[in-house]
Image 1: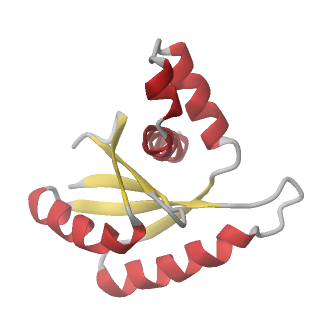
Image 2 (image 1 turned 120 degrees about the vertical axis):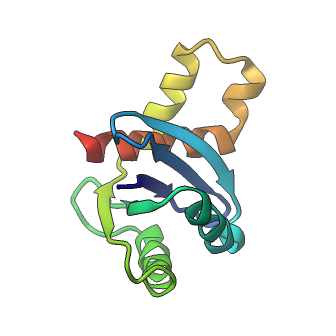
Length: 134
């Protein structure tokens, strides 16, 4: 048994979310630069066993891959090579940033907090994970 970890991969930042050990609750964890993500996940995996990754998949409304999709696929290859024993599940990330912004606003966050794109990315990852959990 282990945790599920979701990654909202981006060119500037990666939002990270995690489940609890029972895989019932998805929570935002942090936001980190893409260059540091494998190191972060290695350290995380040493403390908390990762059962599977959930990786966002950027698509347009018509279902076509977006420009970000190629970056996500390249990252997925690196992730699979670094953690060959951990499965990776893809989840459509359409509208997660918009929903995350709305959730932050509804949660009563300050104007400064609402402007924090890192917070939006971490909440987006939690929404990806919650979507995966069903």
